[in-house]
Image (cartoon, rainbow, N blue to C red):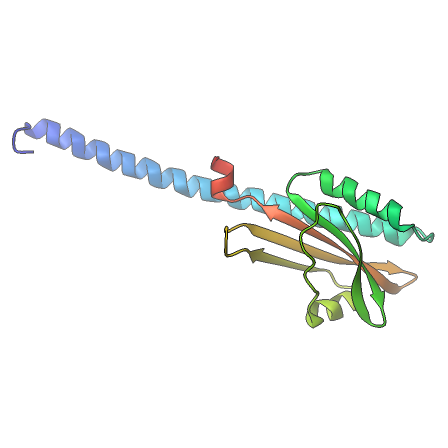
Length: 168
């Protein structure tokens, strides 16, 4: 840079600093937008699972497996990021998978703590990140209560958007 006049060197340095500030600002704004989108996705996943629980809890009739499978497929297909809708039934004090949407992720057993919370009528939510590709999943479990007794649970798994997926 020996051959450039001082005003060109100064303008180049100022341009580089301005560019760096713009990049940092873009990253900060993108992270904030991604966090807000993830929060909205979490709220919507909880709402959809709780709506299905309310529907199943309010009806006294038992649904046949095919009707429930159709219902889970409709719910799972309603949004592209809702990757799994699964129903669990309570048998002998343990939750066992009953029905799942056709495009569901592999079954992940419920831990004892989650099963205990569901049997007591509490919902459970967790966020899990897959190490191989960095995708984050939000898992919602809510108990189905009929006549003041837990009879099963509904699980919804939402794939959360990241900065990378939003920017592409």
